[in-house]
Length: 170
Image 1 (spheres, rainbow, N blue to C red):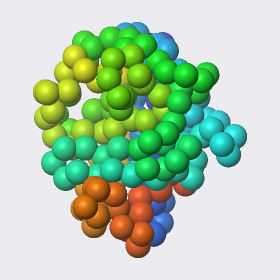
Image 2: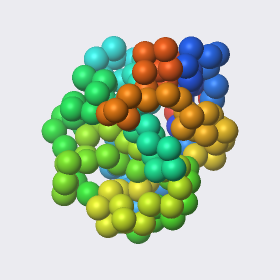
Image 3: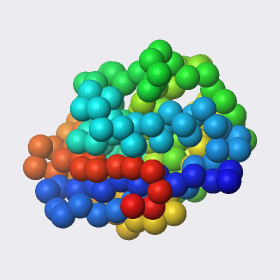
Image 4: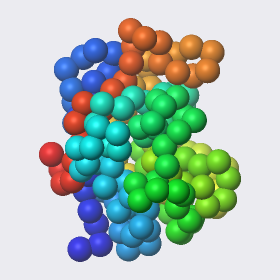
């Protein structure tokens, strides 16, 4: 099958975890999808999305997470180490709920990802979009509303945390 699903159980500001399910486009971005899925299914405390936070939330634009190393956007190499090449730019950031790779320039994908909260065409051709939220869009909208500091990081009482993650629709 050319579609693979992954899920998160996300706690927003200390609330009970709620499920978010992603559909990944493995046809165009097999390596990118495999990288994301590996972090979802891993139980390795040092290399997993479990117990990580969304460290950057910008209403109307995106929510970003996946920094399993530092939790602040400065870390997180690819699952197999190093960085990922930009695989394919055909999926566009044409609306909310697109799952895409964060990077620091060309061919620098690691563990960090973001989910769009609206159309973000300026990211097309620069960030590899590789999936979309097919369940739990309301949870993403709840994340959008948390209080953040001047660096767009959720304040301590409003942390957004991935308590569990895996392959499939959970």
